[in-house]
Amino acid sequence: MLLEVQGLCVNYGHIEAIRDISFGVEQGEITALIGANGAGKTTTLKTISGLRKVRRGKIVFDGKDITHAPTYERVKMGISQSPEGRGVFPGMTVRENLDMGAYARTDRKTAAYQQDLERVFQLFPRLEERVNQAGGTLSGGEQQMLAIGRALMARPRLVLLDEPSMGLAPRLIQQIFSIITEINDQGTTVLLVEQNASQALRRAHQAHVLETGEIVRSGTGAELSGDESVKAAYLGGDL
Amino acid sequence: MDFSFLFQSISPLTISDLFHQFAPLTITGLALGAIYGLIALGYTMVYGVLQLINFAHSEVFMFGTFAVAWVVVFFHGTSSTSQGLFSTLGLLAICLVAAMLTSAAIALLVERVAYRPLIRKGAPKLIILIAAIGASFSLSEIMGLRDQIVGWFGLKDNLSNYVSQARNVYSSPITIDPHGLFSIGNYRVTDVDLLTIGAAIVMMAFLDQFVRRTRLGRGIRSVAQDPESAALMGVNATRVVQVTFLIGGLMAGAAATLYMIRIGTTRQNAGFIFGVKAFTAAVMGGIGNLRGALLGGLVLGVAENWGAALFGTNWKDVVAFVLLVLILLVRPTGILGESLGKARA
Image 1: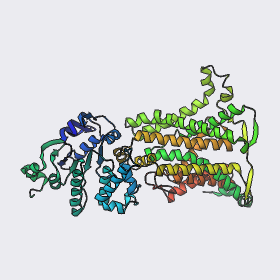
Image 2: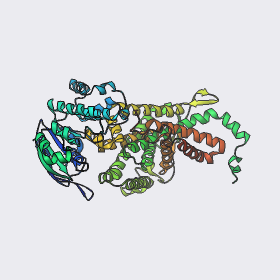
Image 3: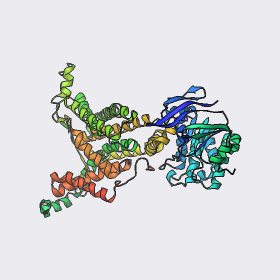
Image 4: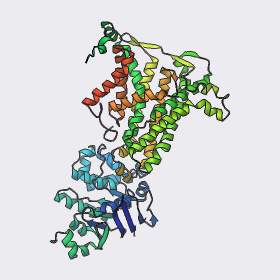
């Protein structure tokens, strides 16, 4: 197990955002968290990255307890995230944004770094075309590509993707999801948060359904795709 | 309302004075403005990263001016002389280093004591601002009590050259005689003018490149643009804030050296007026914008000098602040407008 979340509780003030969540992310797999708005998916990712304080419970990454480690330490250990709303640096060029992704790396002057940059440009040729354009002037889809590409520049062992399909045109959604599969095939473990449940379940090895801060169902992507209640609630009943 | 009193001081004579004095007023204004600009960098950088005004920055500057005076006393003794700039360059270099280190140390102290504990606890911005004001008063009063403080340690006799009459004006024993180098209009531009303006521009260019090109500079910009995203990139925000205060302190120390070359005296509240002016310069240029800080400083310095010539010296601050209000009415975000974060530079 690369990442283990055990009995995690997180509060926003007095409101419980997530309650007693436990799940694991297997090395080399795609794990998906699906659920409605406000179910606690984004909070879960932010807590794994260290942006939210844990009230109770434990987060273990690669055998080490990181529950209270600062975010930058977690990035160094190999957890990177493409955040909700993309979090692109608006005043930096595409290239500078990608360099920021590699901020924690010590090998920025080496061939390995150049390779990773080329790999990102291969996945997202659009970014190469716009390499000197400011992040804030990109379209929503391009910003999403930049956010994912930037997360990959950290050469992470685990990449957390928060709503990578949000606000994208249907054709682009297909493309983003096949890229996620491709990233995974190249060896990066993926934890994916999505409202687009049908796509997420099709791509995921393991999936968990969140409702009001709790995990109500878990299984393989295929199992949950076939589950009647999941179909009714998240797949529009007609997958 | 009768505003004629405003124009009473404008007689044909003073307008022709202004015309006649145009070159000297402008050049000495630029030199003064360069000092404002260097101090303004500290305000603007801290604002860019934390969206907070560091009210203690004026004291960071003030400690730098004392460092200069002390170094001069230490190497030169207390006998007053008047010397040219070039014969004192070596001494001034030591002064510069001492002032930059002193101001940087004070800036780091302020960050560590007044800012970091409150930021860590997630305190509201208002609380942090008040802590900064408290730090400002404390530092100023500590400097004002320095003879008593060394008294407690029984060092009063040893350090009397450095601490005597703590609340009075403290003069550097060497006054620098400016030498005219060449003429612009009817003004002989002096070596001190050139040094002041040149130093500010060089520092500015250096800082600009640092923020634009280095990894740490990118870290500073990333925190200014989106602190949460910056954390996800592996940026240690505490370290970035510390570096920001450090740079602001170094620039204030450089400003303090130029100030002492030009003005030659300081006191425990010398930071206040220059702090207010520098803060005004930062807002005028566009707070959070590095180039704006220097530009705002230069504009303010020149405006003050022209205002003083037109309306009399008593009116120079009025002119400066009216100009600030006018600029903000037209461009609410300042002359250059962008924040440190948004600026591509």
